[in-house]
Amino acid sequence: MSQHMKSPISILIATSFLSITLLIPLKAQVDTEELERLNFKLGGGFSVPTNPIAKYFSLNGNFIVGAGAKLSKHNSVEGEFMWSGLTPGSALTHLNNGLTGNVNVYSLVGNYRFHIDSIADSPFGFYVIGGGGWYYRDISIEKNYSVPAFTPCQPIYTWWGFGCDGYVSSTIASHGSNAGGINGGVGFTIRVEDTAWKFFVETRYHYVWSNSIPTSFVPLTIGFQYN
Image (tube, rainbow, N blue to C red; front, top):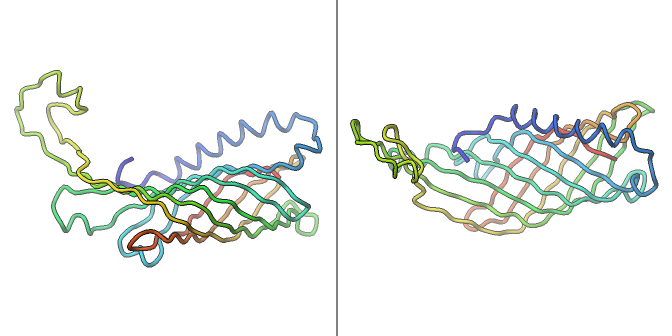
């Protein structure tokens, strides 16, 4: 993954397209008791780091997918996978020219969601969500090496993944860490007419007890959910 922020717009377009392709066949199915007990969500957006890591990182993208069970009219549980990127700030460039960094946070969490799917018989609703689980933080530091001008081109160069001009990016350090974490937030929904699908906008606070410095960030995510 590039050290630069992945475009939230690209993530949202891909998420919306995939959600719509799932919505069409489900809409044609006859509702069953088993199907009505399931829930599903898919979304993407961007993540904002908060203190204590806000001074070191900046905006990047996120993606979530989750599934679970609807326990009652207003209560649901769900398991969720999330990826969130964090863009390193200027600290690395102060150490040495050419250094860049990548930070990716992956999580598998269990959440409880209390939801009001229709406010005064309207298509609008809201929910509160919270839970916790496992978070994995992957960090890598790379250095860009400039290839001298007029370097003779040899086929072996392409095997290593670079050409005869430009620069080479090489990973010089990497580290991964596991930790427990919690999350909580709110979301707003708009029901798609005559279906159990809803468009959602959600924001949540994540706090992870990572080594040395805790990892904390707030993703803003939009997408589609079923039930």
